[in-house]
Length: 94
Image (cartoon, rainbow, N blue to C red; front, side):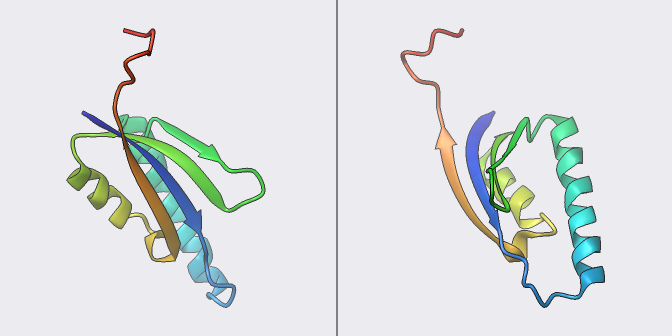
């Protein structure tokens, strides 16, 4: 498994049709919760005061992460920053 730290900043256009916006946000929530339940998206944290989050993904590969992110319903409206993670030599856990 590979761990990734992902920052997602959402920028939905203000002039997007309200019904399209609501439907897209609902699909995003359902998709993200499905991934959380599967264990592929074990952490999601809101950044206070922003329409942004910091997330941890636990996936097989960078290719799998790319597919997950590309399939987010809000992907067209996101700026995404990805950082691959590895264990730190000073970590006291296992």
